[in-house]
Length: 232
Image (tube, rainbow, N blue to C red):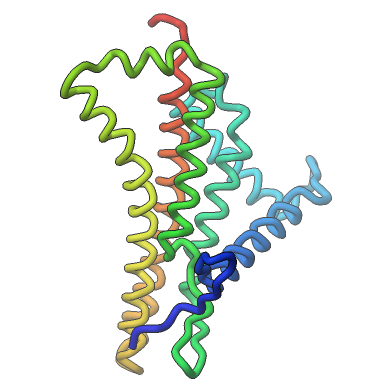
């Protein structure tokens, strides 16, 4: 059965209460993990959480090094770490269980299963990448658009517009489809227990891949606007 979305209106705008709830829960979990990993940090006797956070940071540094470059990408480590942790945890929240009231209103889901959430993340990434290009690489940023003429310029502008669409819909589509499959399998009753466990395991893999892809593409888009002036 299709579940309803809990909505409320403020200043003439309709808001999804469950999406706002899950955004807050995801933010809180990320904050707790970050504090737990950074508190009582030790060089000689690191905790398991500290080891996990250090591994995550090294992983993000690898992504940045392969896209922007280690020299110019140091300032984006915090951004990459926040994105990959926030998106991964958000992808996972809808897997273990769901909360649905008697009137079929769904309150618990992955926030990334909402196109408004993935769209907002994408807008932040795209605006940031173009802002960095304009402020840090002004001459080359604007000169880049004059490299294309006629039909090629139109195609390039289509590409610029399509980037945020594909970034948002890729993440949303994978997570939303995964939660729909979980709902369908749960409807099978006892027969669906084994398929449910298998699908949830696969969904963890998909959620991790989507967090990685979103973070990787974010760094790629930033690197494309921060063209270095050195001639190769």
